Length: 367
Ligand code: SF4
Image (cartoon, rainbow, N blue to C red; front, top):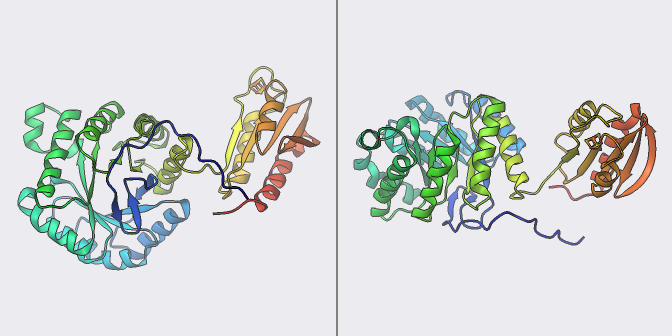
């Protein structure tokens, strides 16, 4: 069929340079990628690979694993080799694990200069090793581990302090003619975080990795991340994202993908257009929406399904969607592609919608 017209986005992407994280491009015109981090001990290779497989299935583009000890470093070669998505080793404190991760075949290494003593002395050697291996880096500045010198200068982790730290560390790599890195300046407060990335975006063309660090449990963390990423991505700032949740990492990926889909930065898949219900509702909209949503979870096609409580906006929205129901009088009018195909009793609305959705999905291109 005809290729779909490109979806409207809120702003053109900021012009960043493109780097490679294994086979995933980050920055430039590359799609904004979604990252997460494993929670298994990295030394438990099977559990880690199992979790990476789950993340991959959920749509994660890049995965990070912690590397706090030599035993973890020793696990990296197999993990890097068997993972289906690029693996980034996350290194604090110990520069020697940076070299181990590069030797292990990791696609990239995250370094946190604030946590590496005498980091500046190591930059040349790290840059050389990374360049020789075609490995990229992330300079990951964190409010919680800001350089002592900057903490003293600014009193706390202000946006200016985070940016000064990042720009300084970037300049050290650039002095060694190393440019294959992205930068993050994370803070748990979305306002400080957004301001920091705004400032950073003006200082250079580095690709930016967005994150609200320690964002909290799922509900709060989702909202903090969506708000902060939305503020930045809607102005074109951000090349790769990681949602941090105190929840299983698959949840982070789902939230990340949904944020990108909401901004048309990634093709929308299943989308439920359901009304909030009100005093006019003639069916239990919450239950209907939940059951339809659960019944169609993971459907790999861009299908919009409208679940509407009454006839005020019901037929209009149902007609606009690929599939929908407008309810009234204990019955549901089922719409497919704008046409009423049948009217069913309330008890059959969910199964009818699911049946029709699966039928429509069969005729759509999967990817
Ligand atoms: Fe209320 Fe009907 Fe609108 Fe749902 S579709 S919010 S029930 S008016």
